[in-house]
Image 1 (spheres, rainbow, N blue to C red):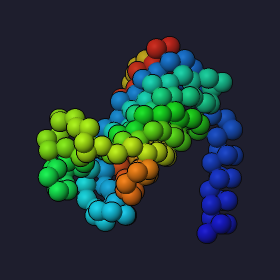
Image 2: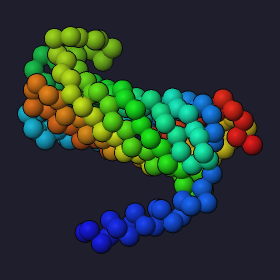
Image 3: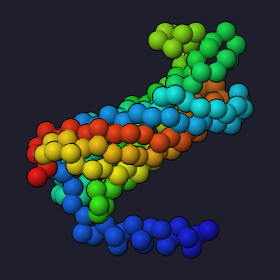
Length: 184
């Protein structure tokens, strides 16, 4: 297993040497279906619809970007008196751009797990906080000087601090990106 990981890391590193990125501010909206599993208190799994992985960032040095990451998912699942579980995280991320307009992003965030009766309801009594970590891989096609569309995959972990909840979610997202500085 260690040897396979090492080969993957070397492959990514050597293929990324000639990468070029988009410098300046960008905003990316990313939404799609996801699959979750909760491995502690609830011990359940199912679909998260929708799953999100949004970003507001700054690209620099042709290969890198820092971003504010907003990721999570909405789960329709009965837990006691609640009908929905909302996973939401806001934090910072770092993106490394590879050839062929692909990128890998790692984000760390403050995460919230909120239980609600209706999906639009925001409740404080069913809210748990903790940390969240997100890893995503995206492929983008440029549509115009400032617009890109793509597809991405992500996986993230939510772990609460007070109550023992640990959510793991994987998703496939469609992305739309707007670049404040023209790409071409």
